[in-house]
Structures are given as structure tokens and as C-alpha cells.
Amino acid sequence: MPANNLYDIKKRITAAKQTHKITRTMELIASSRLQRSKTLLTRYKDWSKHMHEAAQCLPDSYYKPLPNSNKNNEAYVVFGGSKGLSGSYGPNLLNYAEPITSGGIVLAVGSATAAFFPKSHSFFGDDFPSAGFARTIVQSAKSVYESKEVSAVSLIYMRGTKLLTKQLFPLIRGDENDDSIMIVEPSPRVLFPALYDEYAESIVYEAHLHAFIAEQIARVSAMDSASKNADEIIENLQAKYNRIRQSSITQEIITVSNAVRGD
Image 1: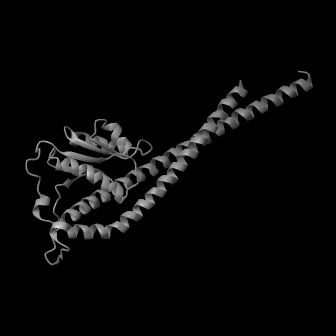
Image 2: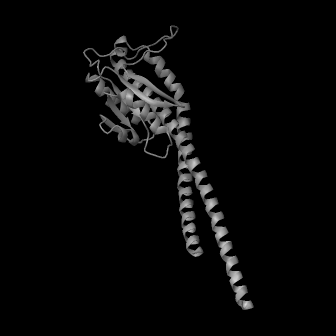
Image 3: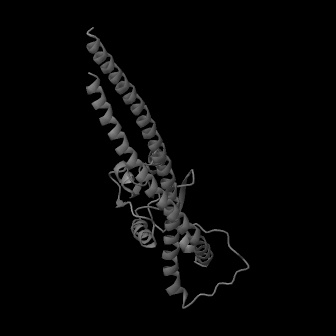
């Protein structure tokens, strides 16, 4: 009986060690992605600021809903991240998004979002934040908006620990700098459409970076907790294994001693 118990415990220890390896590896990967995305966000802040200032020269038409658009419907780009291994990040964000998006059009960013909103209009994968990926999202959101199916498009994401809804289309005009002088070249007709797209892409890219950072922070925390739990399980199982083994050895010694004495 002790031999069987020892074998079962040894199997459980091996399984716990394998789980520990996986969770620790996932933690290191998430930590690396977190540092990389934080660096990108820090570098991007100046560009984002300049884009925001430049966009103030866009005419009012870019900041107003399109005429004859469906005022009873809106679209939402939901940054829900990838499936699993990120603790409460995904469930919290998706539960926040569910009532807001009710009846609207959903553009799902991340496999967790796509699974939660199976009838979403568009699906975008678990790609690392990039300008190209933001451009793809904006093109899809802009297509829905300019088709006049909706009167507005908003982003739903997490920044730090805050769940946010931020309007993308029509653009929201920020604080204007009355002291700034804007030189438009080569001409408004050429510049404004390009600036409009570039500004929208910068908004989406920054939101995706914030969402990705929040997701990786949650994943690092979840994997660290899982690794600590695995360590505790291994320690308890090892202690149990040692007790049973010691007891078995002691019993064998007593049996041999009794046999030598002829008991």
C-alpha cells in the first residue's frame, strides 16, 4: 500500500513541476511583452501629442456625425485580449462592454472578444500592437461609419485599472492652442483626408497599447500566483512523500529486526 501511495504522490509532484515550468515560462513571456509595450508607449507619447495638435486644424465636418447616419445605432471596437491566462482582465472588460454594446455593432480585437461576441461584425487577432494593425482596425471601423450604418464608433479598452469608452468617429476635438500657427502643405484638399486617417490610427494604436499593457500586467500577476501555488503544492506533496517513505523504511527495519531475533 505505501508503495502505491508513493507512486501516486510522485506522479502528482511531476505534474505539479511541469505546471510550474509552464506558468513560469508564461510569466516571463508576459513580462517581456509588458516591458516592450511600455517602451513603445513611452516613445509614442510625443508623436501622439503632435498628432493631436495637428488634428486641430481639421474642419468641423470631421468632428460632426455624418448626415443621414443611423442615429439609433453605434459601433464599438472592443479590446478584450487573448483567451485565458490573464486572470480577471478579460472577464472584467467583456462584462463591462456587454451592456454598452447591446444592440450595436462589435468589432472584436482579440480571441477572447471574438469568443464572447460570436456575432461580431469583424474579428482582429491577438497581434502585438503596431501601426499596421491599428490601420487595419481603423479601415474596418471607418468602413462601418462611412456606410452610415452607425452614427458613431467608440473604443472600449482598459487603461491601467480603468475601464474606458472613448469615441473614435466622429473625432472629438480637444483643447485648441490659440497660440499655435498651423502651416498646411501642400493643400487642405490633399492634407486633411490623410491627416484624418493618421490621427484616427494614432488614437487606436495608443488605445491598443494601453489595453495590451493592462492585459500583460494581469497575465504576469496570474502566472506568478499560479507558480506560487504550484510551489506550495510541490512542497506539501514532497513532505507527504518523505513522511510515507520514512514510515515505510522504519516499518521494514522493524520487520527485519524482528525476523533476526526470531520474533
